[in-house]
Image (cartoon, rainbow, N blue to C red; front, side, top):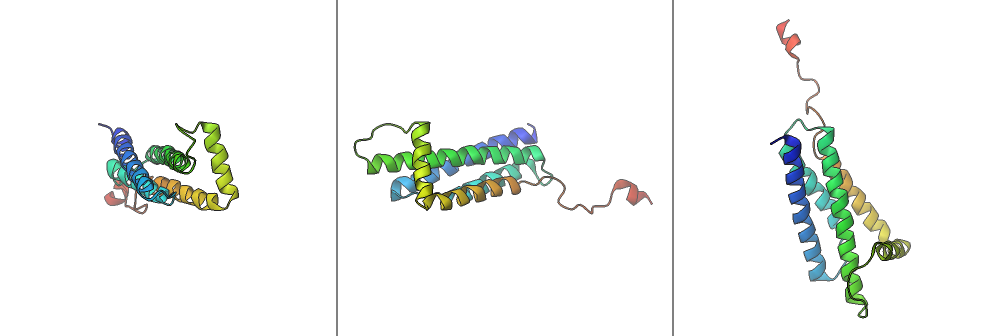
Length: 148
């Protein structure tokens, strides 16, 4: 199996586990815990790093970042949907995309969204920066230097 396939598999598994933990915490506390996004992004990046080894690639970073983005958006959606169900007893079902955007904007205008946005950006940063993009030691001697 290629390193990128391993990266995709392990990153996706980490994303699912992180999302389950995140949503489980939201269900238990009935609180919006978007700070967890930073930890989820870090966990995805770490899983991808372990899959590709010490000499990662830009593609591994893209896989990690893409998985983190989808996971953070999904976690934010599930959180808002749960809180909407809990706080609006007449609402049943799932938020549609436009309802999600309206609620998220209202939250952002209320001041809470800034914390969520920063948490999401930290999660994305951690996911992208954690997998190595090249050799860890740029000053490694080359084969031609050893022959001199």
